[in-house]
Image (tube, rainbow, N blue to C red; front, top):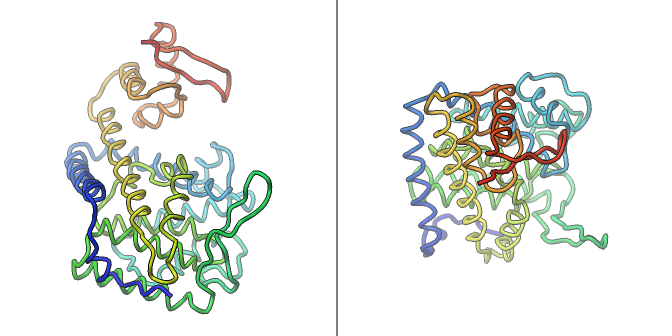
Length: 348
């Protein structure tokens, strides 16, 4: 079984691409800190949007869905779930809220991870919520012709509690002693967590919640304002490819976590750059039509009303709709489709 030796990992030679990603993230994190001091009240609107997107996207990756309206009601209004999917979505919302509000008071230990898993399933009747798996699980892929292939066999149930303790202990040691750059230690922890696959169900969602928790605890707050889960969901094939490439040889301690590290760092950097775009739209008080015009200029190709709403959190839905209508009338935008299929694109 893998020995979770972070000290050994610290002796590896990192290539220029990986080091460049780390340097770029630190640069963007520094800029974000300045933005937060300038207009904290406007940026709070981004927080609620990111919570909705994160909850929707992370569950959708696992095939757990409901309507856009219900997602917003469940996350923003904490309405009562109507079915099993909505119960699981509400559980994710609850864990995400706890991480947002109390990340600095949540140590990285097996007991706390089990508690978060229990909350994830608190709205469902799941008899092993908050407990490690009691049956062997497998990571598999189903292909278009219908056949299923096992891609990776995680640890056996009896090995799992000890392995969870070891990855938590190793992570806490290297972070506490500043032995390893957090932006390398965090993806390695998440990669090991996914290889252990400690639960019968909910491993993917827990891994994304833990990513947010670890980033917050190391001072990287971009996930509070821009949904990392939505970015992963948008390119989930890249996520699975990077994970698969890094899992090979894991049981023997011969795995190469670099593809997964680069994937996760690239996702974090993309989120920081999105944050800068969104901040530029909330930092100055402009008429609604000008705010929407600027947001449209940030989009390439077709975009929806919802895309613009996410970029303009200070505007109401009716203000966004009115501005889009005027931009179509003036010829600056073209409109296609009807109802839910309506989209826009720039004419120049």
